[in-house]
Length: 143
Image (cartoon, rainbow, N blue to C red; front, side):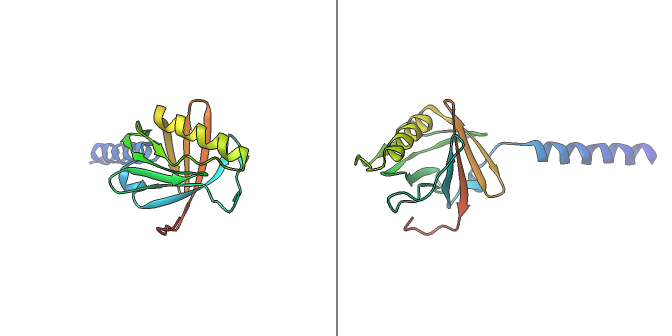
C-alpha cells in the first residue's frame, strides 16, 4: 500500500511538473484572440498615428493584424513555433518611421518563423534576434 501511494504521488508530481513546464502554445489558446503590441525589443509601444498595433488569430490559424498597414496570412503552428510563410499586407508608407521599421521587421520574423510563449495575458514572439511582446485584449472585429 505504501509503495502504491508513493508511486501515485510520484506520478502526480511528474504530471504537475511537466504541465507547468510545457511551453507549447496550441491553437485553442490563441483562437479568436486579439493582442495589442506593448513592446518591441524592450522599447514600450504606445498608440501612434491613432493606430494600436496588434495581432489576431482565427480558429483556422489565419494570422492578421495591423502595425501601420494591415497584414494577413495562413499561420502554421507546431508546438511553440509559428510560421506565416506567405504573409501579405497593404503597402502604404507610415508617417511614423518607427512603425515602418517595426512593420518590416514583423513581416520578416513571421515569415522566417517565431517562437511563441503565452503566459496568462502576455504573448511573446521571439525570432531573428527580435522580441515582440503583446497583451491580450477583449476582441472586437473592428481592431
